[in-house]
Image 1: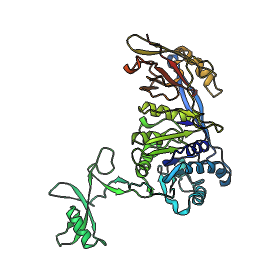
Image 2 (image 1 turned 180 degrees about the vertical axis):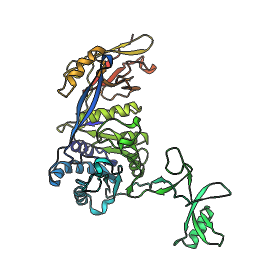
Image 3 (image 1 turned 30 degrees about the vertical axis):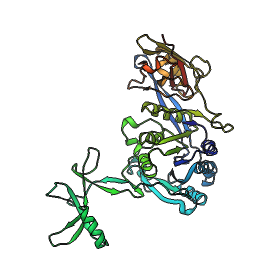
Length: 455
């Protein structure tokens, strides 16, 4: 994770010879909206205060020229961070997709465009179905290949419920299948398909092509018995938006995309071990999916909230992640930031930690540094005094090696249903002879560490 502007980070990666296999860009959509991240701080007696933490602003309500003036340098830098043959996916909506496509056609060449993918997020309900227009329920994902080398692409399939009466059961195997006309298959092809068990002959001797169905799983569509696998084309109707993902996947970050969407993109255009770069990573969906699929990933965002949200998401899933900071005037290495020690005032406050002889680490208090002027921040700080400030913590974990600049956490504790983080944990055995630290985030976006003084 790198905190900083997408153009500067992509340019720094390119200068250092880092070449990504796949870049996914999900920029602001020129919506004119300002997004906040509501966070609740629990107090005594069931009291709670909500902090409205700024996420990011998307104020570009001018014409497409204004949008491209802001976005094009970042997009071009991201293209330069791709290897020849690398895949670029740019996620947009109806406002500027056409203008960005024209710009990319000029930048990469018209022949570099592979698909204009249309993703239907949800059906046209409520406000989206208002009178005077068709419901705006789709996004556009532009898929380009950088010229110069052979690309990676793996065709994808999706499960579809077969139409009632469109399939039959094989009496010999009990499996379901449907058939289609022979079409223009040659005799040699029919002979090959017959060896593969994919030819069905009718009673009259007519040759038809056989397509086997699969038993339906708990999360597949259909009548609960069978589904058929069909190729994925450029119209994606089978992935709901982030409002309909499981609660365990939700981060609360505005504009979050569903993991199923990124899983399809990464599975199609990268191999295990490939490098994926998301220069505007938001809640970290690209990074979480890349890590789960065995890809390496670099994420960037100039919103501190995005960086913290993505970090916590990855840490909670058990993935090692490093957080750096890049200013436009620095190199990537020079910009690497080490979270300050918890006993260093003026950098996110002071975290109090106690280690017991039985190997238990306990958080005993937190005094925040400067309080931002966000709605609810001052009130939440006052409310949290009843818990010695610990209600202000968003999450924490243990870094057994004490690597402040690049913590590799053995555990991560996020807020539970009651709005509080657990306050004690067992110190890993590997950390009991080293220089372990606690690494934590608070609700104001501060990153802090505290040494664990072993007894």
